[in-house]
Amino acid sequence: MTQPTLIRRRSALAAVATLPLISVAQAQGPRSVVFAMISPLSGPWAREGELQRGGAEMAIDDINQAGGIKALGGAPVRLVQYDAGDSAEKAKNAAQRMVSQEPGVAGGFGAWLSTFTLAVTEVTERAQIPWFTQSYSDLITSRGFRFVFQSSPTAVDQAEKALPTIMDLAARATGKRLKRVAIIADNTASTVSFLKPIRSHVLADLGLTAVVDEVFTPPLTDATTLVQRVRSARPDFLLALSSNVPDDKMILDNLAEYGMGGGKLPVVGNGGHWATPELVANAGKAVVQGMMIITAAGAGRGLEDIERRYMARTKEPWMLQEPIMAYGHIMLLAMAVERAGSADRKAVADQIRAFDLHDGPALLFPGQHVKYDAAGRRVDAELMIVQWQNGRIVTTYPPQMAVTKAIWPSS
Image 1 (tube, rainbow, N blue to C red):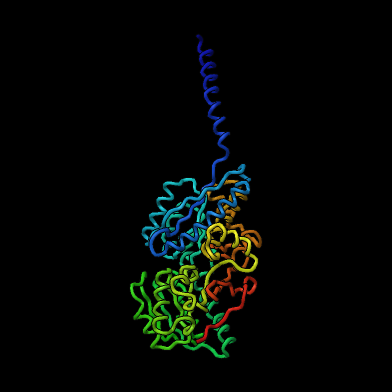
Image 2: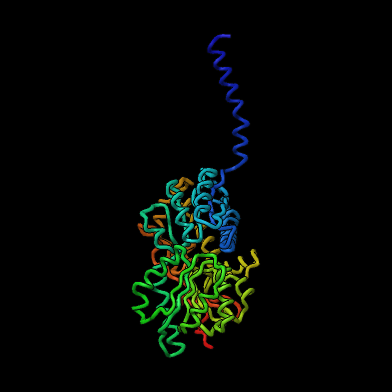
């Protein structure tokens, strides 16, 4: 056999050998697009991670049932989940595992607690993974990062807006201005950011005096001493800035024990954990009645359909910031991939930076505008205030999303 004949035969065999492989690849369809979630799925913050997972999985199913990523030939989306655990070190390790195990991840969201998010985004930024977060701390988007997108109002923004709103509500309801506030707070990153402007100028601006200002390291083992100081100081209201349901319940139980529950002392909390159904189940409807909660998102007017679908799917009694923002973040990632026509991380991040949305996923976020500034903060991000009324959580602010009027608790 001559050399040219041998070369032609080998080429023909090679071509034939590749045919089954090509056929199999075509039969498999387009490769899936991978999105990641890093949230606490164990430890004291696990409930919040569970709620985030419910919203994210619903979004994944909605996208796939609608035909996947059309710009990529109908590629399905897939969610990978990593447990942030109960410490910043565990959260960072989870991010490192994600980067190692999922080299094709196109983007993600998490890690709920600001302390965890600060650790996780150190890893995701180095890997240039576009990363959404609902965490509050201003530090998250104060580090010059380019791949981190903060959808909540920052803690400072919330502090400067929420207390004046609550003060006005109290004045309209009682005809009097609040003068004395008690503060019980943990030392997580979001709370530290929230309290910084309150201590530096918000209290003085509003004519408020902090008669108690106590800080603890979570989780609480006993809230008795903290609550006794509140009772002795006789404040007009309590600003309760814990960050997990067990600590919330302990504070409420002690308030009830010392005769300050059920609105006898108005309580304002910060974060969706204050609005979880097990809080009312464990503490009791009377104890939580009238409590107001500053939060970053949640179902309200105009979002009845998505809340009904979520409730039917998960058997949860309402939809709060954790599931609705997780749902929205997955939808935003899918939109960015669709517009980029690629799951390349840099291309996806470029599309997120170009967002200027007033419909679609933007309607899920208070302010109903999705645009991120150069620091990665969402422009026009409004806070939301929800309240316990008759054993249920209802949205009372902002006005365009409110389903009922807020009440000011009184004894």
